[in-house]
Length: 304
Image 1: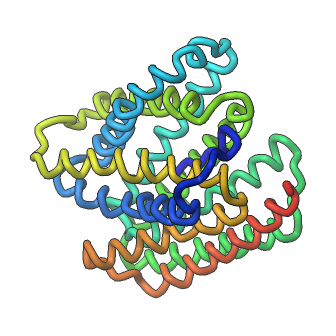
Image 2: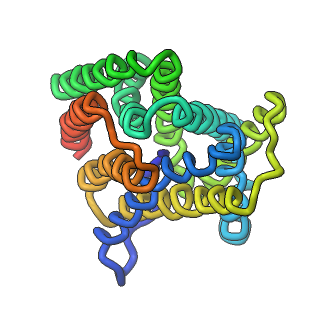
């Protein structure tokens, strides 16, 4: 989840960018399964907190050695927006990871994948950006898909519906994170942006977990391994690969490839967790992904 724009012009390539993009999508697809494995022992808030905390610690040597001057140069307005972006990212991970404890992986990942459409809606009302017919059609398809998924979860009880609502809340929160990033990334490097944002999100989540009385320690070595892998693969390798790919491939190509994340997450959950997706999750997921493709094509052609 959280894909920012590229920082600099492409350097001389030694690795095919399509291969980097493939591994980036594969790494982000691991997130849901790793969360589920960690949830056998750790609370969802603790998982979210450690995911961002460990990712921040892993990034710290690189950020402090290469971006120290940039980090010190932020003005008061930029710092406020960085804090807001981090807070929204914290809400995104808290609600989305909590949703995975209540509803299926397939339902959760396709519902949270609606965030680009929420970005379009928020931008329309706040910044008066035009909503084209393609964007409206994509939104209607995605909303239809979410209704189908939610209707299918009625039979699963109130907890599944609560999980669906949390996933949609996570999508809204990350949409706000994307909108802030769209503005800040025009003048801040990738590492200069994600390091303080991840750090802010980590602090918010640690305080949230502490206030809720959620234990942050006492886990087995296996659970710590899942947490470390969650920070390393989906958060750092996955997101970094996607961001790097944006500097070497078209935004349309990358955005369409990222739609493979819900598919990969569902397949991994089926293989590793033996969690077969419900028919309603598959049908609803197809509608949501189709809506994202239609809306994404229009947005990319408009920005070309």
